Image (cartoon, rainbow, N blue to C red):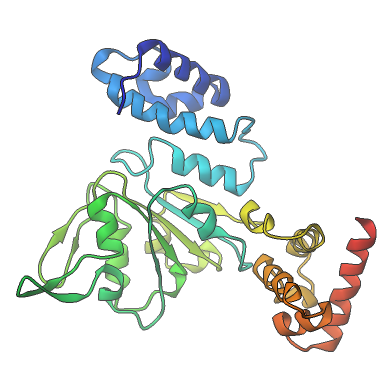
Length: 304
């Protein structure tokens, strides 16, 4: 890391207090919130400031009250407390509506991530790596979760509510406190997390539907109550308006509609299908539901 002058650090420190207030800045920066850093802490403080400076640049008008779920997720994952002993490293993002872009919103905040999707019949090797012949010896090749721990990378776990009995113990170990977390590979290798390791888990069920022993491990729980900006940006204005209108209402004819469905409809129409054909292909051939859907879409178009 390049040298950062004391004057620059002091400027960054003032920015943090200006943006977050003294109380939140103190939680974020520790002792450095109220005084310039001394030489002993300058390097560590510079790392802190590089993360927080990026957060401020991306969200200059961030306000805690009324912040959307993406802003909260951004601030949590960009905070210097993320992925460090004494900080926090486990975030659950949930929504009862699929296709809100939970994983996408998390993944785009990092240069490198490891990502795994859980399913009922999964084996531990699907989570931590298979057996391979390496240099003439059969051993476990650390991948996905194990590799994220070894390299200090974020691990995105999709559909965390779908875990099966074979991976439950391993999952609890992965989600343990950083200072305690250890996983043992089938060949006996013990792996402990490197600084930077963290878990962002996503689910389409409510948090209280997860087993308490797992739910209790998460430091942060965020409700993705609307599609992410990244998902909405892929849509033309009228489809974007339809998605936003559908989220809070959820009548029966919106049951299978989401931002992801809207993107599919838009792409089908872009490849020669008319609107009704695209709706039938993406949502199914329920005439009553599609008639109601098209009537709602017409109203939105008339207003725009």
